[in-house]
Image 1: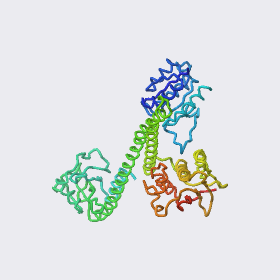
Image 2 (image 1 turned 30 degrees about the vertical axis):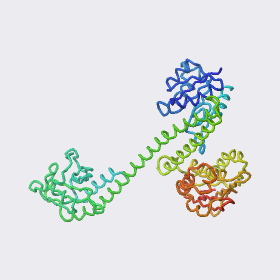
Image 3 (image 1 turned 45 degrees about the vertical axis):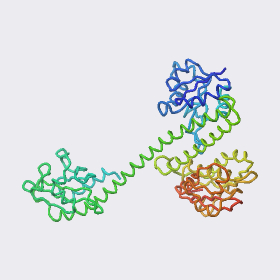
Image 4 (image 1 turned 180 degrees about the vertical axis):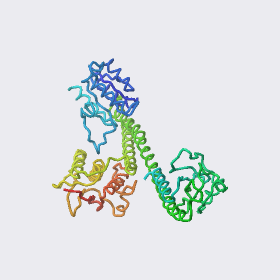
Length: 131
Length: 377
């Protein structure tokens, strides 16, 4: 059963992510802040992380992804460098969708737009875990 | 134009013109009973009194606010010189009045007694008049900038605060509708479907309102510059192709082979064409067609979006670009819409120095034509 960590400060949004994932057999863990998220990465060792951008600060999500993807040498997060990250974002506007997952700019694997379309979320999760 | 800079320039110019040792510009507070030092031009600024002047207790300032100058030849013996700072003997006090509204006073000081004569007055009065007008203009700009900044801040906060709960509710309802919260009865599915459509409508309303407000608040939008029109139209067609296919419609793109560069922002231009083309798709029945033509004529880049849809009645055409207006044919079609899309489009088109026209025949179809000046090939 693949494990997914949802890092999202809005408990209702976290539930909206959890619902389709659990119904499709994933084991879901939740963290409500970036800090708690980093701790739970070590505890739960998830197969994929669903990460919100704006949490306790407007860029908390970016900071979590940077810590995981570009850990300092010998960092406690080094083992999770390759855990796929799916970012929840409302920055994407369908009319001016321009930035894609760019390693140099933002170390995440893909994006899911809010409001969440459950089938799109499931499709992206499955694709990233299968990689 | 910054107010502080204007005030400093005024004080410096006055000092030179009146051959004064020091000059102070005083501005009247909102109540009109106190004057505070706004700018000083003096070798020794430290000696300047920081306390405001009570107009009632300063005969020279009281006179100045009524439009008259005062010359004091010897401050030591003249009772009008109650507020003289430092060791100055000569004082010249002139009004700062703009459009009959007193905004402050200008004081010139000299160590030597009897320094200011009629000539000095004749030189200083016109400067004070121009100075007052400039101060008033700078204040207006200041007020406008503050207002714009708070408007921009409000929209940024509102964007997040309004969009976010709607997005959460939509996400939850979509999960429920897909059956991820358990199997639903037919009636429950129907009710949740209605909730979902209402939320989708609320989302587009919030987005449209914020777009409309953002467009009118400087500092929020991307910076304007030369943008490829062809690219923008191409992206919009690509984005809407799946929706058209779902409906059994064809979007035909007749591109222009010249690279048409126009003034605007990518986001803004995308918004214009996504809006026009999605309207065409929305209001054209299955088996109809939507044609998007890009061409260059008379130094203008023209984009035509033509559909074979339900059309717009003639008496509705003149209201089409009004905020919240929806043509009766659009309402009757059962398609959701906020009535803001075309208002946003017109606002954007005009911001980029373009213009928009519409021709329509009820029951036959509609053509929107947008034209922009071409910057270069």
